Length: 513
Image (cartoon, rainbow, N blue to C red):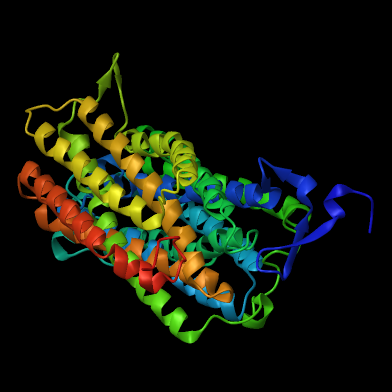
């Protein structure tokens, strides 16, 4: 073994993995945690670079480069897209416990995501290529006002519109060429989404679960390690919303979708360059149950799984309400909110950044408060934080329910509410993921983490149905109902605290008596 500090190995996690010694830590945490957080930063840059634009693109007119869908259809499809990508990690979590190591999942997932972004770019220029071969101005034809894109074949009304756009007496071959270009536009887009789905399935659960490998289950720094991960996650969110969002809204949707892939390339490059040095052998092999010492009693494991499902149910409620910020509220801001600040019109996507930036600001404060309360023997764990998160979410929606009644609401009210949403996310997200790894049998960390993202995905899917079902109604009463639902959920969560504590068997640090 060489004399380099990075080559000195110690046992970590649940006792089977190795990584650089204490001398190779930053801020009291293994340096590998920071590499994983950096990789997660760019994966989220990619994810939110697409997500922040998605519903705006679908509902945008074809004349402006969008797909010209109705608001209801756009919100519903956006819910399925968000829900699908959020639930995809269940597949990767299962694969990482049986067939593919966590480290390999991260590499393959990043490559698939990059391919998806390339397909976004190719899909935009596929009609241009067809136009060059056929001698038709297909880009102009597919941007006719009122045209709806995205189907495998246009309906008869759309065909008539395309035919009229070609020429008064278009021949059959020209019409078929335009229809194939119409199909190619959709085919590449859906193929890109498929690659993003499978890439996210592989990378998302493993980039989170691998953090748990650096800490023993009882180590109080585990929650702080996940706060570092979520700090990188939300920094990636704000960068993804800012740059792709600006390019997509101002230059063209495909620029935003495509540039988001550059972030994943940066993250993958750094990960491949430093993984051996900073991760040791953490996550390099498939975890086995006997790698982690004696198994947990089956009844304890069953009880903890029940507690895990209850936490998941309230996560679904939280996310179904919260994700209106990228659906119903995003479209309302685009159409009705005064976004002018000192003569500059703030892009619609940038408003989402308020909650993300405030997440980054709230996270260290919550960590400090948790430690401070612990010194006074006051426990502020995942259950308590999640209850407070639901209350904060309700307050934010209550404020917006009043604000949207104005003829032309100002951004200030959204800044205030979205700041509260950032606090709610900072309370709920890191604590819930860290708790999932404590409730899980050690060799099932990735599966439990991916299961938590299934709960998030179900909430996102529900948000799409809520948005689509209420898009024609006045917004104020809709937001009021959502605020009430959040408050009721918080009350129910609080009432179940003792039941959850008994079945967690100390995993959340709550007294079980």
